Length: 501
Image (cartoon, rainbow, N blue to C red; front, side, top):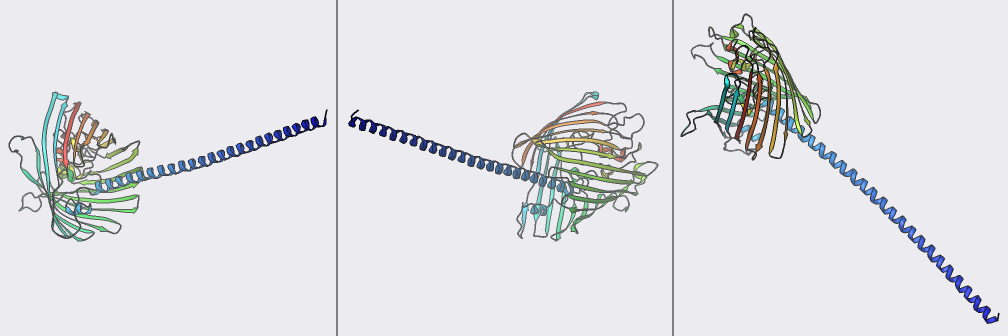
């Protein structure tokens, strides 16, 4: 090999070595860059994963806050409902509406018009004798409220009672249902006088203005210590004016206070002087009781009470005085998307009707104390087929009930009410059943707006012969709504078109 060839060969070898080194180095550099990029991507993915986890925790926290807010709102609604049930119709004058923000708070003369217009329609079938009822009837209540200044106000409610006179002008007269003069001595002390709507503090089981318990009366209510105090005196029946002891008078005291934010305690008593059916001279009747309302948690609450009664035997026509006790326990809670209520009540009784007796058994009035539609009554069934409704004691014969209801919404405008009840354990004369029956009800409500609504429903009851209707009271003696041995099936389809404002 020549020298030139040698150098050429050596040069080629050197160039090849340089190329190989460059290629290897480029590959290593590319591999390092790829590895760095992969590591960067992995790092980014880890950061995104951490951010997503943080977002999920934030969303979970927001959901928990939202659910807590919903529970708080439901609890607030329950507290408002319990408060209103305790003080229902106690002060329906314009001062109430001022407290609710419906009237201005400034001084000066103001006028307010509220009211209730409703049309009840129903068809009822009773299996005994094939009795069948079908009707529609109108009732109107119109309020006229004057507020003269910060202290003094008046409230007037006129009523056109249930009427079927539907052509030209109605045959019914317009009557005065409420006529109240109200005066506020201080921010926490109020005096009312006139034809007053009065309700008890024990779930409307004793007396209820919803069922026209509106005597000529005077009432003083005040914030006293940790609670609210009320004292009133009312005259339901004057009798013969020249005679001093042939009236029907009612005196009441009650006090509601809260020793803790979740607990309310209710204490109340009623003393009545009632003209005896024979002789006409007034004889005494007492009711007294202790109640509690307790919010178990944000979802559940309970309401219960224990009542006692004493009734002079001359009011009953019995050998001995009437005495007895009644207990009541109600549990309310939110279940799924609706509200569940379970109610149990017991009243002691005697065959001659001398057991526990509420005020309404002497006044022959009633109250919305139960869940069902025939043996107890709701607003839409408070019409021409309520004759089988009973008070908590079945007019002194005693009664045990177990009732359940479930209420919810199908949409923002439509709600439903389902209820069932068993009524029995009553003491009746020999030959009659100790059971009253079972009662089932289903109802839909469609609300056009906050003032105007339509209720439609179905109520069915299997009725035995131990029922003593509220309208008979203690003066019916051993009067019952069915003949001995009768077993009835009662079925009612009903509707109520109502404007309330």
